[in-house]
Length: 121
Image 1 (cartoon, rainbow, N blue to C red):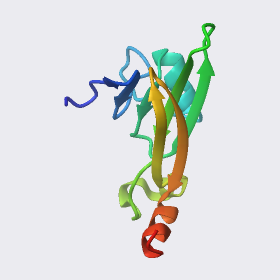
Image 2 (image 1 turned 180 degrees about the horizontal axis):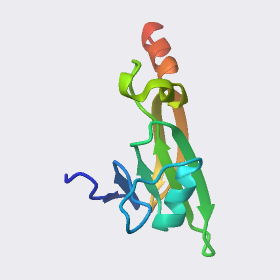
Image 3 (image 1 turned 180 degrees about the vertical axis):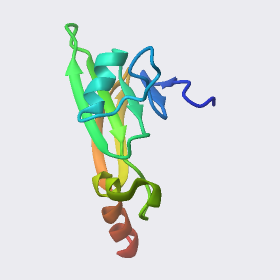
Image 4 (image 1 turned 60 degrees about the vertical axis):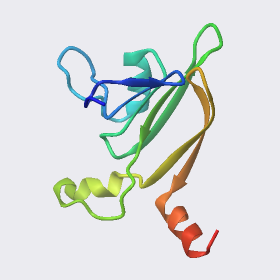
């Protein structure tokens, strides 16, 4: 799949990142999941930022629109990021009951995953 070309699955658009507008810069900042909704006007999930952020709005028809920045799934300090490593949220997001862009969300930290495997769960 081409880099930065969004792909739609079950009503959710996925891309490494989405742009803020005509300048082509990645959505980021203090509330990137909210920005996803405001800029894309649809349910979207992205990576790129390495923090975890989630925002959900309901439109006038009652449809929920989700913005998700999924964090990062790695267990090491990335030298290129320096102190920003402390801001990163390590783990995975589990989406359930996905239908037409709507879903339930569960965050699972990397520490919880490692503990579950260690404990044999």
